[in-house]
Amino acid sequence: MTTATIESAPAPSPALPHWDVSTVYPSLNSAEFTAGFAALLTEIDGLSALFDRHNIAAGPSGPVDAATVQTFESIVAEWNRVLVANQTLAAYIQSFVTTDSRDSTAAARMSELQAQGVRVQQLGTRFTAWIGGLDVAALQRHSAVARDHAFMLEQAQIQATHLMSPAEEALAAELGLTGSTAWSLLYGNLTSQLLVPVVRDGQETLMGMPAVRNLAYETDRAARQAGYEAELRAWAGASVPIAAALNSIQGQVLTLSKHRGWDSPLDSALFGNNIDRPTLDAMLTAARESFPDFRRYLRAKARALDVPTLAFYDLFAPVGTATRVWAYDDAATFIVEQFGTYSPKMQAYAARAFREHWIDAESRPGKRDGAFCMWLRGDESRILANYKPAFSGMSTLAHELGHGYHNLNLAERTYLQRSTPMTLAETASIFCETIIRQAGLAQADAAEGIAILEASLQGSCQVVVDITSRFLFEQAAFAARRKRDLSVDEFNALMLDAQGQTYGDGLDPHALHPYMWAAKGHYYSTRSFYNFPYMFGLLFGLGLYARYEADPAGFRTGYDTLLSSTGLADAATLAAGFGIDVRQPAFWRASLGVIRADIDRFEALVGA
Image (cartoon, rainbow, N blue to C red; front, side, top):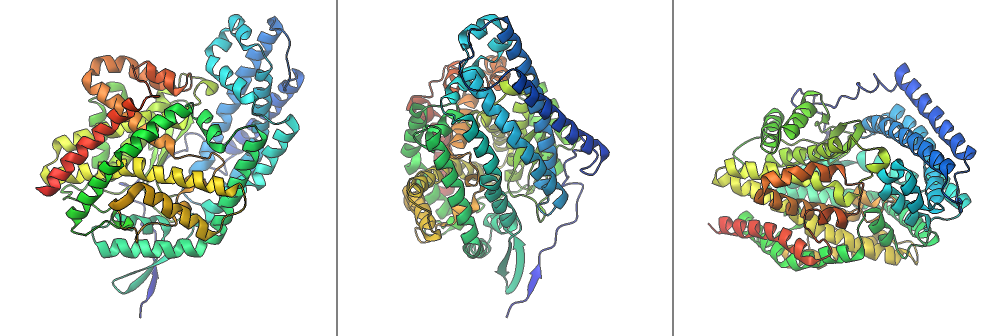
């Protein structure tokens, strides 16, 4: 017979800080926040009136004259200002929502802001439709502001051809609050508050889902298996509302894609990520070619763990002897030092992020799982992590700090110039993560070296193999969802099929993860196909790092400019500036070759 206890939240520790957003407003209940919220509403009202005054809407706008130029420049200036103010307020509220899903005040404020966000979205649709009716080439000849926003204008003209009528777009934005947004909120609240019974050593403990999933990193296989089995039971118990959320969100995406003239949600996602089909096909071709190498890695890891074949719950099992425990302060010092080997600018940025408490590192009930970086204002970001005192925890910090470094370089741009797609959003994060990995390997002894190498391959396997499985699942789910809602069993079957196609004989087919569609929050957003950009980011970042190693001085002269320009051109154009053709598999094969070399080294170390 087992007894049940509830896992209590660890006491806050100076070594595991919470982020500081009091530099924006003292609190959600402060007079300053109330005034800031009211000021944003006033600014949105003013922008709406400006749009009405100048008839910013769909349709031909006539010849570009001095009045048109003046209208355009005043609209862009005010539009940029409102978008920045909205971003800062949203990030501020998000800092409370993501660290405590039970914070009713933050949830209420977020709901209020989302209602105003509908108005902003509607104004954005009007702006795009208006641009679609302008002679953009003539506008650029007469306006420096238009030339500075050339790529935005080109994208807006294409997007304008995929808009419904103004009334339909306005209605879609309003219904989104009680549609996809509501379903996404339900998913987030439900999964963040799940308490999962886990039996270990005869004792049943109720744990939050992030803590349960973290059992996958335990050295004890029985603990990993117990966590995996408890997780599957929990997902099964919560699967009906989660499946309803996924069906509803995918249904909305399919409906809007059809009415906006996209052949599929994937085509819309490719446009939104500033890449085309040839680029995606080239990358996925190279990825599929690499699967046998990743299966070699998985079989070598099975040998290292002394098991016949890896189960899904073995994917994150540590291998090698991590002789060093990376306490948070030690990780911070190491990151700052190693970023300094690239440039004083990167080092000063990292030191500031730690010094000014931009990072929320403590894992606690109600806090979102995983890690992310969000732009707050100016050159400031905030980073959420659930820090583990291991090299992997430090690597995650470096990765998210890379996103912040990207934001630092974008600070000089207007909001409309800095709209970076997911494909390019991983550029700096992968680069910074690689700096730390290379430094860690250089300083590690043999035992720790294999642990660091395995952790890196573990991550690469997730980004290339597992993300391909998620991509295949999403493709298949959308295809089936065109006909009707899917059941829990059908979602499970699609996920198992996708995992079989990608992991192959690298994993035990009887110990896969059918509920990965429930575990991954990326599916619960109208921004569909959230997966392939991560693969693009990893391989593009590795390719850039290889060029940095070949010519450090030459690389430094252009890298920060590249980061500041990720909203100014499509991926192929930006890559061409570094002599890279992303529409050919050769570049992607070369990046995967870096990973293949690590797999060879890992196999040799395991054999030794």
